[in-house]
Image 1 (cartoon, one colour):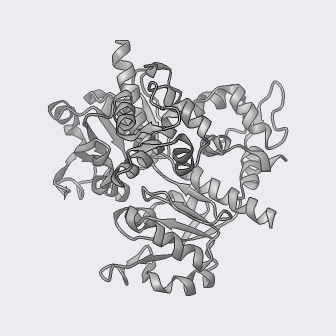
Image 2: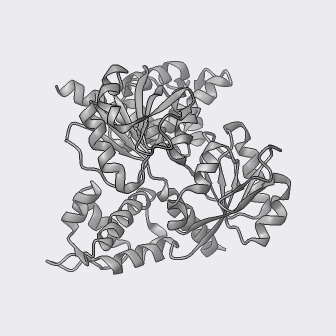
Length: 212
Length: 212
């Protein structure tokens, strides 16, 4: 397995493949051709074959991919074949939506603790998790085996949240705040920003208008 | 301007460039070198130069990019130098967070109407917008000049929401539901899915562990 050299763009597409493969599995489909999979994922089939080649030789010529085997292998390679404990900082509207989001635990990411600095929020219980004062993070994160930090603060408080999370011992961060973070090189940060989707839809609507 | 040929990956990066450029502008910076901009955006400088070349010849050798000029040009090319009226379908936790999200109107996308099928939600007023029954969508969308539909329903209701939005006359869709949609070829759809960020952070944490 060549997992170390998997490019970032491939990882982005793998999320789509896993989603489509799991929906095929729910429909009791066992094998899928690269052409069909490509169509369902809105990419071309040579791209899929190239991306999936990172995970070994799954395609069977003239048959396709064995769905269950492929899902298992992709998940193992990415390290998402287990549960990751997460802590969230910033229990505003977005933070609450994340805590209630059904899809995050389904992907193996379980929010075990939530922190905020607002006295009106501390003590709230959301989905069974009590919101705690940020000052308790260094004690809580290690005791709950938290490895991933979610940041859903306003942008101006995101760096502070990151500092607290890293000092408390998280190994990686997913931030939903529109702000770039400065972190040590060994702490991966993922920036969730859907504004490029807003920009893209505007751009493609204009393209369609120019065609007409 | 070569806007028609701008690749999708470039559009994704432009959102980051705009964010970083706007934060530099807030700090009253007027000019930035491609090296500094690249560093702030976590991409390499040749990629930035290539991406920005789609928007004309902005770089001044030995000086850098004029920030204001570059922001204006990128926004004009993408069609985000104006307001886009949006309608949202699905007023659950995520839908409410989107309606309250400060960053969406800042990017020029204004939610003008919200729809749901749940009688307990119809009539709620969120950020000044009254939640309406989905059956009213065909009357409301044209009267409010809505062009973009947001879908934040559960996955099993996303296709129905898309059908309603398209029939009502929206020109493009941004969906937050984890489901692929079937739509006419002239309706662009953007899938917002942050699970690849979850996968990526897990993958890079494992990579760091393997280094150690």
